[in-house]
Length: 195
Image (tube, rainbow, N blue to C red; front, side, top):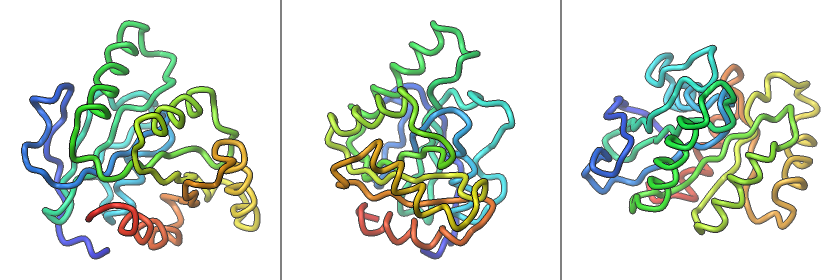
């Protein structure tokens, strides 16, 4: 994938604010601090298009980024951030669910998990939700730079056994630091979505 242009389009909390065009939307889900914004920046080779923060739970809106005027990356707020009030968690959870149910342009879900840790209960809930909605999905095991490169493949297989024993989803390693995985992820995105 050659990235010619990329731009932040809008932050939204309800369907009236979603982009009105019918371009495909590639949606990033995952727990707070799993690296969704860094994933976007690495994939499009920009340092600061998607704002990253050292403080987890900072993204509390649905952020739309238009890529090549052909599709969107959509960054959903992360889940499982304990410092957010219960009321706020419910509010954010509701507009995420509304987006996933009502948006007609979702082309692919990219579900980010942390390669270093077994999936959390929240990860399993998200995985089951994606299956229940019958949404196309690939699972990206992020932060692969944090473990020995010789252990990456085995750890990805281990995570798949835990989360997806049927092996009907693709699992791929990724690292925002080491860009060696970017091409494989783009290839799979192009295969699985209609961009």
